[in-house]
Length: 192
Image (tube, rainbow, N blue to C red):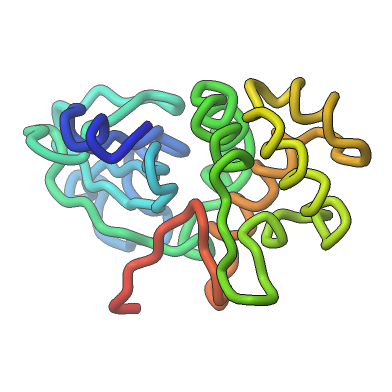
């Protein structure tokens, strides 16, 4: 999705990873005082959120939630991977796989458009298993013709196996790791 398409599209949306109808288990308040909450992953920049829901919210795992202008959301806070409950952590990989499958062209375009970061480091080198030789093969092939799909990538670049899984693995790494120097897919709040 291009920046102009993003600007014109609807409000930011997140996929629900986990739904806790009775709030956090470690919350010692009486049940009637606890608010339902959900943990969700932003579709665009892979940020994790804890969302406190209103009493009338009807939410299930896998649902899309609009993060703005939704009366059923009382508060939306960005959280880190370690703050997720185990249910949300176990659902995360499946949701990322689904998002990459839904927006295949966005991630194929990463292989087509990736640029050098420094004189010695290229964005493609951030992907797991892609070293200098494989990076150069990708760059040579995309000069001939842009890649049209993950299958096209795998067919044309000898040694590149499961390019979709490589993207998924990098996204998960960026979500889980706090201290990565370079991020390509998962945005982090600059104030942290």
